[in-house]
Structures are given as C-alpha cells and as structure tokens.
Image 1 (tube, helix red, strand yellow):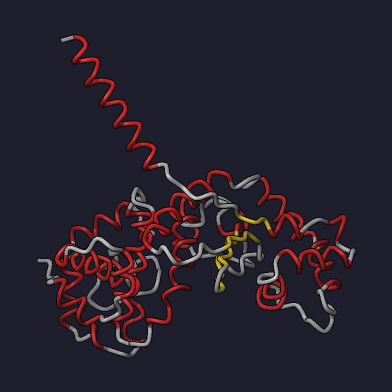
Image 2: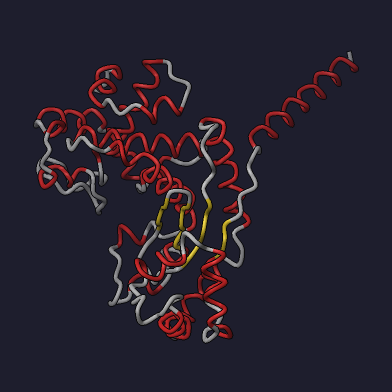
Length: 335
C-alpha cells in the first residue's frame, strides 16, 4: 500500500510537472531597445550613429523620425542627424530616458510573458510570422505603433499611475487614462495593437454592430493568448466598473438593441458607447456605469458565439467578419 501511494504521488507530481511545463511553453522573444540605442548623448553628433540605427531598424527608423517626432527630412539630410542630435541632447528627453531606464532596466519579464502569448499565437496561426517587437519613447505621443511585421511599444506610457509628468499641465492625461498607464497593461495593449494591425482590414462595415464585434474579437484574441489575464485589465475597468457590467449585462444589451443603435452608421451617435472615459457618457446610461459598454457587450457576444458553435479555433473566430451571422448564431440575449 505504501508503494502504491508513493506511485500515485509520483505520478501525480509528474502530471503536475507536465502540465506546468505545458503552461510555461514559450517562444524566445526579444524586444529591441530602440530608445537605448538611439539616446546615447556621446554619439549625438556622430553621423555614423544614425547610419547604424537606420541599418538596424530599417522599418522603424524613418517612421519614428518623421511620423512620431515630426522631424524635417530636408533639415535632417539623409539620416535626420541634426534634428535627432537636438532631440537626444534636450534635457527633457535625457530625463525621460533616465526614468524609463529606471523603471525598465531590462524587459526580461515582459519578454517571457510575450513569448508565452506568441507560443499560443503560433499554434493558432501556424503559417503566420512572429512580428518584431521594438521599444521606444515618444514623449507621450504614441503608446503603440504597428507595421506589416513590427509592433512598437512606447515605454513612456507604462511608468506607473503615480508618475508625476502624467499630470503635468503640458500633458495632463485624464484620471481614467492615468490609472491604466502602468506595467500590467503593457502586454495586453501590445497584443491589442498587433491584433488591430493584423485584422483592421475587416472593418469595412460602418455599423456599431460591426465595430463592437470587431473590438470584442480583439478582446477575445488577447484573452486567448493570455488566459490568466484578469477581466479588469482586459477591459481597463476598475473592480467596481467590472462588477457593474457583470450585474447589468442584460440592461446593456437591452439599451443597445432597443434604440436601433446596433445598425446605425452614424459614429457621432454611437461612438460614446465605444470610446474610453470615466463612464459611458450617453443618455439613459447611469454615471456609475463602466466606459465602452458596447465593447463589453461585443466580447460577450463573441464568447457566446464560440460556445454555441463549439468553436475551438481562434483562427476561425478571427477570420469571420460576417457580423450579422455571428450575432444570430450566438443566440445572445442576456436578461
């Protein structure tokens, strides 16, 4: 009997180790630290520095200079050397880079989390390449950017809700946004940017129904790649806002479905149900509500559609943009 118990114990331990190993499967992801490569004051006046950056970041360098920083390519010659030298040596840039480096001396933990998510992604989208990930700072201009095969991550958007410059008069992010400018949101926001860049061509239908189901699919994509992500982080809600949505799911759906909003193409009429804010600022929706309640409903419809259709493939979900068919087959109608 003792040996039998020992065998069961060892077998159970082996199973535990096996399933733990499965959960820990990951791809080796490395985030290239563009801001560390760029912001070297000792190289600010070296033309060779900018030539090497352009060679290392062929997709990213020019767009960063022109689109994010708004630098003049004529003034900067071929490698933006003159305006970039001014940017690198500007005291505000030096300070921000120091603070970013203090919070993110390395991205080891983030790369581990991202590697696990990309492992799941690769199992679902076997023929699709893994994008290159690049970090940067843009002085609070761009949280994320995407290209065909690159996802950029603005580290200056994740310095923590108590970071003083977020409330500086020259920047002054609203409180509902500041609450989410922290490390916990970096992974889901990176995956959101990646997913939107990959699937945004599906958004040809201008109705609220299409937009909320598209956004719902993006949330479903994130949740599939990060199964343990709390719903409060997934939706960017406080605990109270999430509880409000869970308690009022039927009311949310009734409000959206009974006012012909679902089939409206007038963004001025329905974007208040999509946009972020302190709450959903719309007639008939109480101030204790969560923001973006149409996205919450969209995600719940996608969940119900997957359940009703017995779908086990993320690819199948993400490639279906027949919004009316999704709604019909979901049989969604919470009370």
